[in-house]
Every structure is written in structure tokens, then in C-alpha cells.
Image 1 (tube, rainbow, N blue to C red):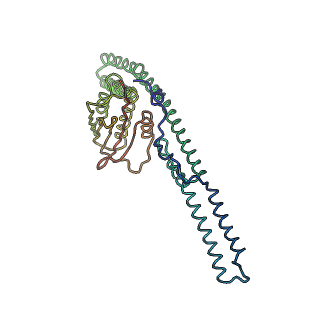
Image 2 (cartoon, rainbow, N blue to C red; image 1 turned 135 degrees about the vertical axis):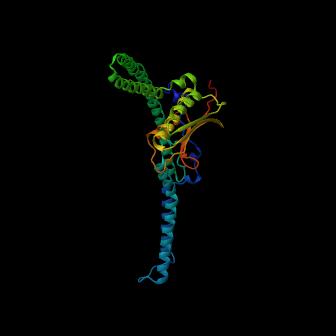
Image 3 (cartoon, one colour; image 1 turned 45 degrees about the vertical axis):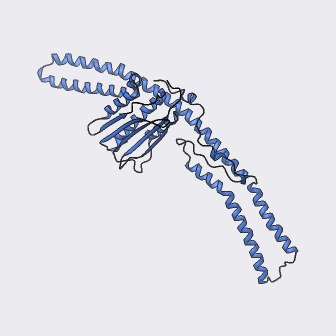
Length: 344
């Protein structure tokens, strides 16, 4: 499999979501400062004109004069409240957008509206979010690339060093068993079985760290092998891989495999499910991976490192990732990857 360090270069600039929210509205021609100032100035000018004109205030204040003054004050306060309310609505929207911002769910932007100062602030925030998402995706690409290299190194050392050592131990135990007294042969046989089980476990871990079947036989065979590996006592994993799948890049195939692997790992460890399904099928504009189980579901659990890692991998190849309740019960993990034109 190819390395993932060049994912960002192949994909080009990071996607930052729809740009419709960046459109400027017409009510931005007058700033919030001038709106409030103009309204206050108008109120003061009208009050001064009335006091300089036929309207007077007696001492003590007459009832009619008090009604006029209080009514004017109420109108001025109401107008100020309306202007402030309208002017601060975009800031309230910006606050909600900032509170809900998540770099693992890119593309959501605060709508640009309101007076010029508010609109400039929202635009600056959106631009900052664009930059943060691009930097986060680039950093995640480098981190995951380093992780894959480390996986390969550990798998190679487990297979070449620890595996060979345990194989030598098995051969030595075989020679000991042939020469051991009858009363010790059962204990030697148990040591052989424990060593053989440890060797099988190390080989299984090495295969999971470095998916050789993905490199040698391709994604469909790798997913079938993954389903067979997780089919154990108490859990049955079915697989369905479409035969007319569009060609994916090596990076996309690796992401599909890792997401399926992590999804089945979560199913085996946390869901208490007895059935699971891995499905890879073509959809409009790409392919979709579905990992479904009939377990206890997510409930109100907070997303852990596993799901966040799957989200980060999806971002690297421009895929859409989601985790949702399955039909009836259980959990659906979906990954939709767009097809890149010209992939060979």
C-alpha cells in the first residue's frame, strides 16, 4: 500500500464547505454605530425642537405634559431596543456557531449578515475556521502516515523476531518431549500448546497491524478476510462486497480497511452483539462502506478515540463518515468515499 503522506497534495486545498453563507447582505451598508447614533440624535433633535417650540414643561409638571415626555421617552427606548436587537442577532448566531464548531465535522460556517462591523467579525471567524481545518487535516495526514509506518515496523519485528524465536522454542520443546520421561510429557505438551497459541496470537496481531492481504489481494479480499477474522464464538460477521465497484486510490482503500477494522473491533469489544455485517457497495459518485451490528447501540456514550480516529481518516480522503443507530437496535457505521476520476 502507498503511504498517506501525499494525501493532502493529491486532494489539493482542504474543503471548507459551502460558500453560500459568505454572501453579503444589503443591511450591511450602515454600521451599527451609525444606526444607534442616528437614532439617538434624531430623538434628541426632536426633543429639543419640541422644547424650543410650543411644547413647554411647567412647574409643577401638568398631567398632559408628563404624558408627552414619558411617551417620547418610551418611544426612544423602544427604538433603541429594536436597533440593538436587530444589530446583535448576527452576533448571537456567531456565538452559537462557535459553540457548535467541530474540526472533525468541517464545512459548517456562520452566515455572514448584519452591520459592517459584525459582518467583518463573522467573515474573519469563517476564514480562521478555514485555516484551522486545513491545518488540522494536514497535521492528521502526517500523524496517520507516521502511525502506519510504525504499525508496519512493529508487525515486521513481531513476525521476524518474536515469531522466529517462538518457532525455535516450539522445535526445542519437541525435542525435549521426545526425550522426556513419561511423567513429564504432559507438562511439556501443555508448554507446547501455550507456545503455539502465543505464536498464533502474535501472527494475528501482526496481520492486523500490517494488512498484507490488502496489499497483495486487494480490498474485497481484505474485507472478506477481516470478516472471517472477527467471526468468533458468539459473533458472526457476514460480508457483502459488490462486484462492480469503482476503482479507489490506495489511500482510500487503506481508509476503508481501517474504518471497517475499527468498526468491527468496537462491535466485538463493546456492543454485546451476536451478528454483524460488513457491506461495500457502489453509490452515486463513489462507494459506501457499512458496518452494522445488532448490539446495544451507542446510547448516550461520548465518542471515544476510536470513532474520532475514523473521522480523521475519513477527512484525509474527502469521505463522509457517520455513526448512527441501526434499524431496530445496534449501530451503523457508514463511510462514503467519492471516486477520483482517472484512478488506475
